[in-house]
Amino acid sequence: MTAGSDPVRVTAGATNSLVDVAGLRVGHAQRVGDGYRTGTTVVLAPPGGMVAGVDVRGAAPGTRETELLDPRNLVERVHAIVLTGGSAYGLSAACGVMDRLADAGIGFPVEGGVVPIVPAAVIYDLGRGGAFRAVPDGSLGAEAYDAAAHSHGPDPWTCGSVGAGTGAVAGGLAGGIGTASVILPSGVTVAALAVVNAVGSVLDPTGGRLSGTRYGLPGEFDHLREPGEDEVAAWPGATVTSFNTTIGVVATDLTLTKAQCGKLAGVAHDGLARAIRPAHTMVDGDTIFGLSTCALPFPFVGSPAPGSPEPGTAGFDGAAGSTGGIGGAAGSSRGLEGAAGRIQGFEGAAGPAPVGAGRNAPGAAGLHDVLAAGADVFSRAVAHAMLAATGRDGAPAYRDVFPSAWGK
Image 1: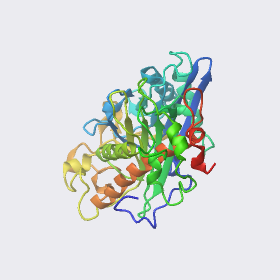
Image 2 (image 1 turned 180 degrees about the vertical axis):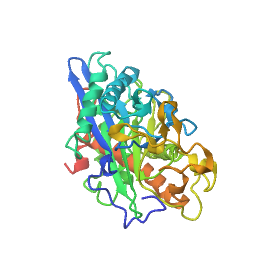
Image 3 (image 1 turned 135 degrees about the vertical axis):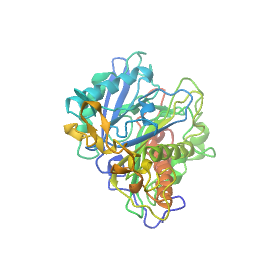
Image 4 (image 1 turned 120 degrees about the horizontal axis):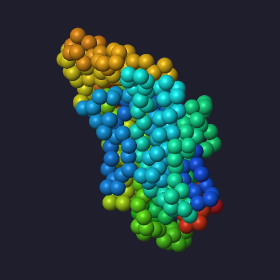
């Protein structure tokens, strides 16, 4: 663990995955064959939604609803995050997730119904199954939603060449989905899920070790060793042949504001860059969402965290005006008053501060630990994606190229 955390007391969560952040659910759907090699992954929010921010670093992104995550904008809670293949075509998978949420009455309340808030990001995997336009659509998004909605914890397909990572390639090797978690000494959980589809190399520049394993927790990657020199010399690496992109989420159960979630996403990009070299290139659309379930409200410790409103100010009482206003399955809203959509808490200091506002924000020291952990868990998630990926023609698995890493 990086500075700010006690390495003796830091452990992985029960499953070492994103679902260690209580309330989050993950579902995958994929199509392989008949020209397809692609898929979609959905991260479902707990009842009441989740606060979200985003940081887009790559020069070729494909995203949806990211402007809503700007702290200046109205909506405070999202209901799902969609990570998908298919490049810009694949953004239609989010429509299937929206339909499922709307059918369940989950969304931002408006006159006549609800509007589910479903940000999304894509990887470029066009043509990797043989047909250029064989891409995820609304039905595949709905299938991934169903898998998440009916999940009760991780399954054997949590990592590897599944979901959005089905057609992923990273530095010439088979890419995929990886995940990792950590429980900080404070009891706060931080976890990440990465879809690794990078043009850059995931290998240490001096050998064949996965760069992300350097940030593992005690015992996490102890079964691996440095690959043999003959295997390293035989691996030619890869040149840039197409667009790529690594996308993912980093989440915590600590109450954060939208701005702080955006910062968490930004620091997680440090973890991406530690594990992939180079990152954020002209042919990558690297995008990370930062999420907070707000399960653990923190009082101020010493001074407010950077970006938190000051107590006693109108901004403090209204900072997250609609945060408590996404009413889960019922689709109700504390603070949306009828068709006019007037939001409780935007009326100055008289309004109560909803969950996620300044008085529940962590102190600067606690926020630092969460941010540092966000970078580390993302690096570890990248490594797990590569270790679990399944090889195929044109994209061999890491374990097949470097079998001596397992002592073989």
